[in-house]
Structures are given as C-alpha cells and as structure tokens.
Length: 436
View 1 (cartoon, rainbow, N blue to C red):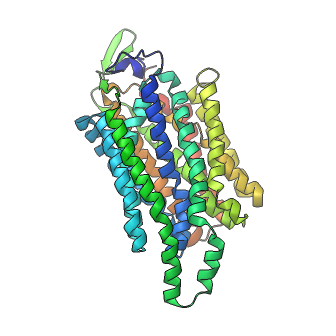
View 2: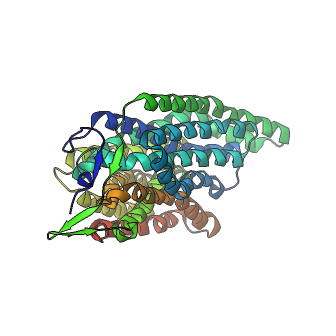
View 3: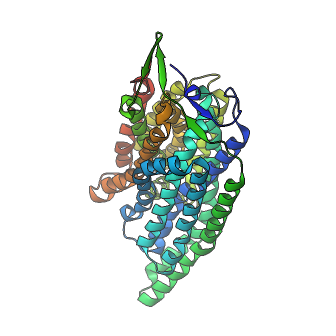
C-alpha cells in the first residue's frame, strides 16, 4: 500500500524523508493555543457554576458541550472552506474567529448571561474545528507517515503543556478565594448584595479574555506573512499485486469512519479525566486547593506519555502497539478509580492522562492513512469525532445527578465502553478497507 506521504505532496522542495521545520514550529504554536483554549474548560466549569449560581454539575457541564459540539457541526464545512481559501488563509480565519469568541466573554460577564458564555465557547469551538481540520493532516504529512505519531506527540507536548499552565493561571485568576466567596454567597440573604458579589466575581473574566483576543489576532497576522507550503492532493492509487485500484468514494475507506469513532471515544475519555477530575475530586472531598489545579495533574501525566511517544515511536514500538497499551492501561486505571476511595481513586483518574496520551497521536494518522485526494474531507470527518467531548460530561452528570448512580460507578460506566472500542480499533479496526 502506498503511504500517505506518497499520495500527498507539498508545493515545496521539502524532502519527504524528514520533517519540514517551519511548518512544524507553526503547528506546535497552534497546538499550544488549542490546549490553552480547550483546557480552560476545566476551570470555567467550577467558576461559572459559582459565578452564575448554577444549581447542578449537569448545568455546568454544558461548558464542554458547547465547546466540543461545534466540531460536529463545523468540521465538514471547515473542509469546504479550506478547499476554497487554502490552508494558510484557513488558519488566519480560524485565529480571528477564535479572538471574536473570546471577546464575547466580556458582555457575557457584564450581563451575567450563561447563554452568552456558551455562545462564546461555541464560537471558539467553531474556530478550533477549522484550525484542527487544517493542522492535523498537515502535521501528519510534513514527514514520513510512520513517524506521524511522534510528530503529533511533539505538538501534543505543546498542547498539554498549555493545558498544565491554564488551570494554574486561570485557577488563580478565577477561583482565588472561591471557598470564602462560596461561604459568603451562602450567608447572604439580601438579593442585591448577592448580585453584587457575583458581579464582582465575573469581572475577573475581562482582562484574561481581552488579552487572549489580542494574542489570537496578532498570531493570525504572523501566519499571514509566514511562508507555509500548501498541500496538493493527488489521485489515490493503491498498488495490490501489480494491480491498481482507484477508489472514487470516501465511503470505500471504512477505517476512516472507525477511526472517527475512535477519536470520539478518545476525546471523551480525555475530557472525563481532564475536565471531569475537578468535580470528581470534589465528590471525594479532596483538599480544595488540590482540586483547583487537578486538571494540571492529568495533563502532566499526558506530557510524560508524549515524551515517551516522541522517543519510542516508531523506533521501539509501532503507533498501533502504543494505542493498544494505552487503552488497556485506561481500562485498568478506570477500574481502580471505581473500586478504591480517597487519594487512590483521585490519582488513578489523574494517571489516566498517561493512558490517554498516545491515543490521538496514533488514531489520527491511522484513520487518514491512504486517503489521497480525500484527505481533507477525511480529516474533517475525523475532527467531527471530537464531539465525543461534548457528550461525555453531560452523560456523566445525568447518571450522577438524575439517575443517582454512585459517582465512581457512573465514571466507570462512562469510561469503560470507550476504552474497549479503542482496543478494537487498535487491533483490527484500523486495518479494515486498507490494502494488505
């Protein structure tokens, strides 16, 4: 079977046996931005629950729903946009939209409107859908496909590095003295006094999100003036015993759709372990100062996994084997979290970051491998799988708050099916419909 880098060529002289440096640097910077925006959700969930006086965790979990559901609706249109305006212009447009979404947080805070906050988060998610539809396949093909997981791991270091920083930074900015504020709100009976406390709390949003909007627009300007090679797709011809078979429909690639669902499951378990750990730690009565930065614990574990991926793939193990090991570890740690208590259960969830680390880097190149001229559309379908992050926390909240299932068991019921499917994809699913 022809490798992806044989069927897709860049309009530059970059040799395909090594990675193009400048595009790699830009991709890493973009992944840092993705991580900062995405993992801010872990802090926004408890902050908005407090500042907007939301009644249940289920309501607060719509923060992640608004962020991730945008990928489902915008990924395929993003593929069309990229075909019309090109890779670089798509990145510029995505960064500008990301800035607009950030600015919407300002009137949302001033009007104490949860709907406006969710709108801003959805617009940010829409921008990320466009950016990720462009960047992920680009990152996969700027070097050999068999080392794509290693390149994505390098970008992942930037992504999760931002994810480690944002709960610490936003935790200080947004959740400072949150226990005192919560007690003060509970003790306040006068509605006007309570509203004044909440309004003051929401003012913490202004400076960070104005700064982010400015940074995003400046980065868009930088991308506009940097020379990034475009991607040209050629006909997808697969050699099989000296016979060539031309595929003329994306539905002739079942491994793509199986890969998209694997991404769905992958993002679901990432969000549960990263954004859900704050609620989980609160339920376990873990020290609030630790819970406030608990997302960072999960993402530090992911960083460790990414470092291993950079070193080991494909030198020591294949990306398929790395995926199997990670999924099996995920099953093990999920069971430990469900059947232990206190710190053991809490840190088992944090260690899921290690299990989740190499899943996306392995799944994405396996899902788009060999698509040729269908790569941009295939990438968009894979990106649609990010919608798994939209559903997982509301499902967990529904099991916990509405069906009154023990929160640890609800966690296990949410995680286990996803990991089991990823094991299937790692062993068999990625081979279906590909040449032998």
